[in-house]
Amino acid sequence: MLPLAKKSLFWDTDINQLDSSQHKRYIIERILNFGNLSDYFWARNRYSSEEIKEVISRNRSELDKKSLNFWSNLYKVNNTYAPRDFKPGNK
Image 1 (spheres, rainbow, N blue to C red):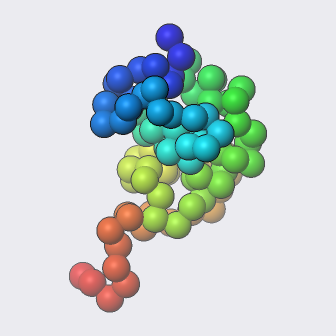
Image 2: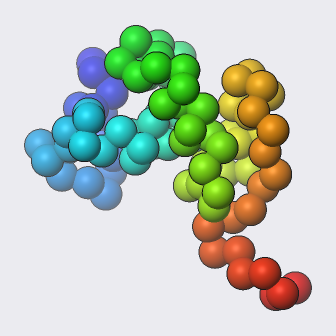
Image 3: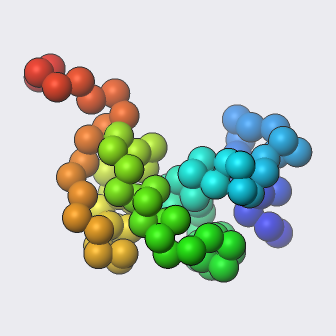
């Protein structure tokens, strides 16, 4: 099954509205966070390493801490974890 058709990856999205080019950041984030190996290979064949690295290195990424650490190491991206709701000065 193609990742774009998997409700386990896109449970909160109308999968009929997903466009692999227009929504690439969202799709890559979901696959890196929740996908399995075949989902990753699909993404790797669909998107370039640079496109995937861009998602990994994006400030306040939607990737959870463990996923961000794993993919940053795999793609050799220097990244520090800043959750999307991070606000400088808050403790």
